[in-house]
Image: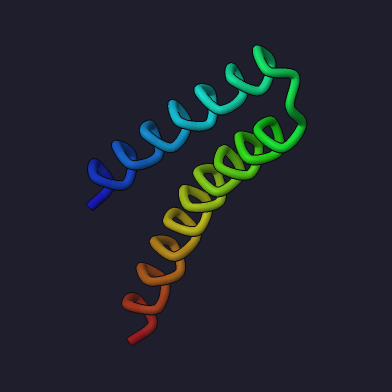
Length: 63
């Protein structure tokens, strides 16, 4: 399950870099904000995946 999530995260980061590059070219703040939000979403998805993995492994051990 980790491989598809990592591939999706890499795609999100590539998209955010593309948005930020366009923002610099066109001098638009909204594209820079969109790129930042996409990058934060990718990071948050990885954090939640690892936190839930540790939480689920702990809950399965308690039982």
